[in-house]
Image (tube, rainbow, N blue to C red):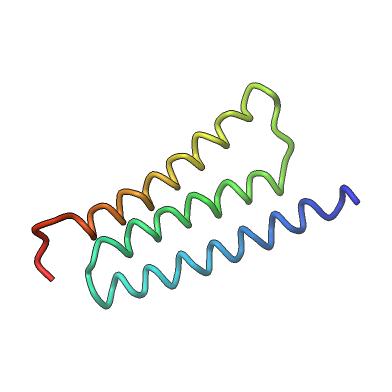
Length: 90
């Protein structure tokens, strides 16, 4: 059962990488920073999932995974706030 965790982590990393590519394509078409923030968030998520799938983390480095996820989620929150702030031209 424990051999499936790296496989699942790799699958999620691949899905995050594909989502990043889609958001980069949308950003190239629209030049809207909203898509760039989302692409960054999915790139960070893909990198962290890849690290988790390929190796074991010690107890000292494990909090760095949560820090990277916090950066990823903060990027999404910033994108949403910037998109919906009052006074923005639509």
